[in-house]
Image (cartoon, rainbow, N blue to C red; front, side):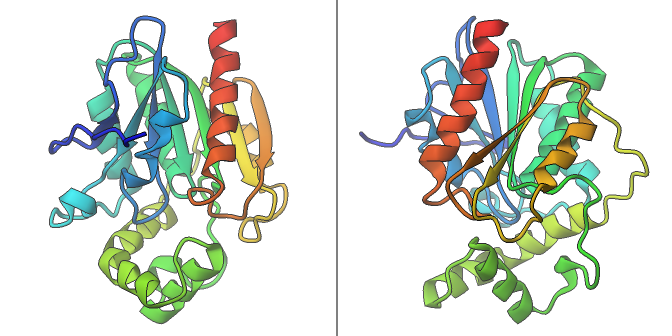
Length: 257
């Protein structure tokens, strides 16, 4: 099957397939890991039911927005996304992979505060909770070689000429995203009303075992966890299992709505 062509614009939102899920559907807004844009979600619309409309997030400084100024504040990142979702009709589910998890959480907070867009579910995958910063040097301040090596270890970057070239192209965006996460200074991150599903790779050696359970303290709704085959980086070969887990949860939500 031919991959759906995204509807592109200066918008942060990139619709894959139909932008309108219909009166009984929902939008699944997907935020990728540090440095990435909407491309990792290009094929997701082929793997989910028709009533789910997949929307990728393309922040400034990546893909077709490569020359735009980067955002280095979590608040700016989240408000950049939330502003385009406010006023949308119908339910929205938010998905965030790694760095995208905390971003999706903050977007959910902003949308719930405005009460203009119904957030029915937050799904995080391989995602640290807000405030969970590794002791020692901050990732966004690492020398290039060390930053690249850490990404290779996490499975987010290939170890070779091609992987290095991709890193050189996206390094500034990666640093900006890590900076946004690592300098997020809110003392109380509060909780969201939407239920949370935290997904973890069964061979994740980056986040500590059980770290996904920390998301339970950030929701007033139901909290669940699921494990899928894969390491820390789940937007590669692990995508079929990951999408199946996400779609199954959304189907359960849909049936009980």
